[in-house]
Amino acid sequence: MPPLRVTRDAIGSDSALDRGNEQARGDRKVVVTEIWPSAERTADSEDWRPASSGEATPVLESVDVEFAYFNERAKQDRHFHRRAYEIYTVLEGACEIEVEGRAYRLEAADSLVVCPGDRHEVLGGCGPFLAQVVVAPCAGVEDKFPSPSDTP
Image (cartoon, rainbow, N blue to C red; front, side, top):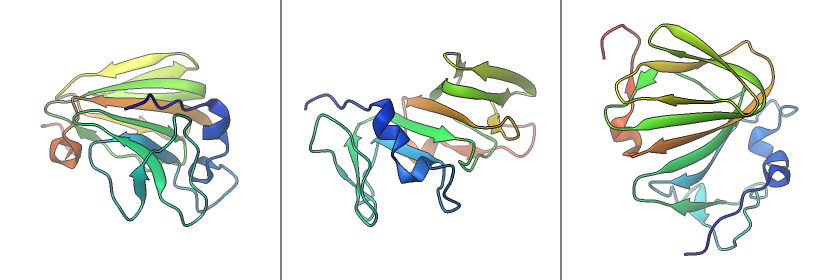
């Protein structure tokens, strides 16, 4: 399998991350543990490009890693993982991530590693940002647990 190169220009042209589009969801997965045929297809080029309207998004399928880009428009929820680490890196702007009751402010080039079992959430209200998250080992929705309370 060839590598998949995702450039800043390609991410910048992705309608899912378009801050000017009220319908944009604010996130884009490029490596997934399971392809959703209605929305995704196996990448057939080394250079990732966002899909045109109505087309499936090119992604790489992995056994146990997911990789995504997101911005302030992405839906966020407080959750934890029993197995997975989440590695957040801010690419532009700044955001805050709350982990176990403590808020961490991240600016461009800062990263935060959230360990299994730690309840966490990307907080809103920080203004525009672009970040990436790597989840490993990822078991998809089977290892993501909502955490509205203090007990995992």
